[in-house]
Image 1 (cartoon, rainbow, N blue to C red):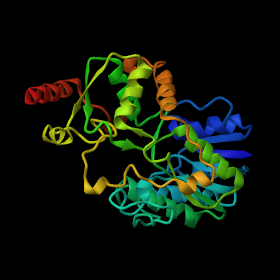
Image 2: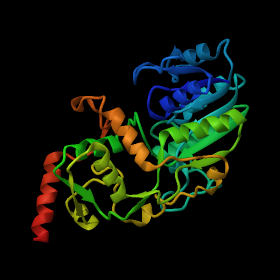
Image 3: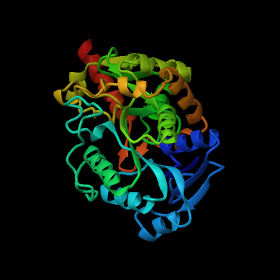
Length: 338
């Protein structure tokens, strides 16, 4: 097959490119060349998807069996890409998010769940991440004349993670000592490896599937405590986890999900976050690897990067708690416990 990946240098896009090349497909990437190096073996086309002339140049004289749009966040921009590539490819796979489901995670998500209200020509300031992803889905469905595959992943981890949730925890735990462990160690989680999402997307793209899927691992495939222990095991650390109650962390101003990646205190608005149904996606062929493999392989990749060169999140959204704040919360917790 001939595959076009919009993006293709970071995280999921990179995993799609590597998997497609391994399957013997011809791969073209379209990106600005700013986020990272292209995977060797691709035809790299430099351009900005927000520039109409660049999209025209990309499409001119080329056709593909599959487009994988791995970096679409603004409906208006995604719609321009879909229209430019309409008639140039058989299938357009758009990587959305379970966050696009209207009301999630306060409300449950299913494949039939409608997306949040958002117009297909919405701009970057017309909603939050999930709302805009829903608008992007509509932009592709309305702008592309062909098969439209909507992939709504859950919480993705794995090598080359650019959000840096798992990389921050691995780095922090590798330093050892007393580590602030948030909330309930028995909290069930639902973590999917980026390579498994990439493989499923390609599988469906090869079949010319026109459908939408919630793509994640089975609920409860690990717990928060098990996950942190896997990080400790992978890094060979002597870390000592100090489990601090949710309510105390809230009192101390600990930032959910950002300062303490993947932690949030119990709340009605997050009820369904770790319970996305997977029967349909597994029946369609999704296979997921053990979380231990994801953790181990992410640490192997991260170790190749000097610690002072590691990035713990995207611009304006740095993940991880400052050492001084962690120490202060631990001291306050131990004082209260005493």
